[in-house]
Amino acid sequence: MLACWYFGNFQPWAKLIGFYTVHIIGLLLVFDILRTAIIGRDDDLIEKRRMIRLWFPILVALQSGGVLLFEIISTDVFRHDVVQLANAVLIFSLTLFSGLALLRTDPELFNTSEDRTMQPTPANQLSASEQVLKEKLDEAMRTQHYCTSGLTIKSLADHLETPEHRLRALINQRLGHRNFSAFLNQHRIALVRMILADRDSVDLPVLTIAMDLGYNSLPTFNRAFRAETGTTPSDYRRDCLASPHGQN
Image (cartoon, rainbow, N blue to C red; front, top):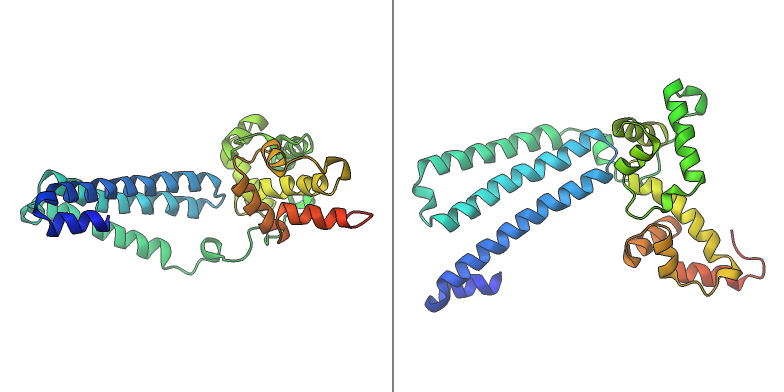
């Protein structure tokens, strides 16, 4: 983008090429903001934060993307009163939303501690419907449904035949997980540690283990494993097998 800006402003022969390239790249980045927001929102179990993660990027995309798009159509942007008014309304909406949503002291939204620090609710404090749903969830985890590739909160809710919002509430408010990926990793990494410590599985590649447990890439698996154990899968396996009795 820097190169395109330079050619667009200081090289007359490439002015239009630089101008349009910068704006098209900008629009692609705006699209990526929306894509990332939607993908990340699905994993979040906290409803307030899910709302912010959707509407804040949408407002940003409308404001910045609208300006970029209109500049492509007309280089005389700031002489159009309607465009100026629309831009001002979007900036005001963005500022107002940021103030209302982000400037409050809300530990639920801005807790920077580990995902699984929340204490689960004791079984005797669950409602009857929550208890039944938890039993279904426990059974799905016992049969290793968490190894399903591309598993999402929606597909898990469909498997359990329950509304998605009820499952989100159970995992977050009752089981103490702030993100769905943290809930899955708790079960997946526990199984990984058993496999890596098994001498009979010493020749099983780490990539194969990751794929079998539902991870879509090795870097994603390595990050999740390091977050849970503080070490890499290869180092964990080496340390476990270095001991004659393995390692818990």
